[in-house]
Image (cartoon, rainbow, N blue to C red; front, side, top):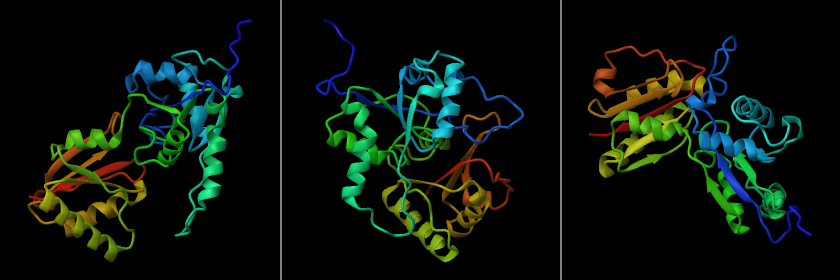
Length: 268
């Protein structure tokens, strides 16, 4: 007798579903843009078919899937979807217990071991890129699960492409220290690396600290260094601007404190 019930011998896949870059950046009085303006239809259809998810935040994932449903019917009603959340990162410098982590990943990936495809989604952009979901992807490989990435927007790649800086050699170095002295030292170190390797350096910051980081970059980088900022990418008022530090010091730039930005530089 034919049956569609999954068996342990038939493993599911971990499918990396791209998210939009506009979450939390939209005017609450205006409806969000049509997903087809920022995501490929292939990604939307893949998301609509999934019944099991792993996410940073279940609430925002449901909001994303509600937008998906406006374009493509969901295979399962939104309320019936299984959405598990990634473990919260430990505070401070405490080293996570490897055995505990292994059990957490195994629990999250259990549906795939039973034959169900699982969607992994980030709060914005591509899962696993500057994203805690990378650890789940690595665990999936260890369990011999197929990992399938779906095309979609990445703020880092879009910012690099729009900057006009070195795209053959670049490094994303995450967040800089918050303390001003440590941050200044780190900026100078990264500028030296950029100059030596002719490598573009990319960093991000919590949006409310955008202006402080911008001022620190202007203060610490050399005048001839190329400095670029991309803010609110894919939004109607998003922008990317590149100039030398010397020129930036003569022009005002009003960075928002509630919209993500990517900062990049290339030392001359």
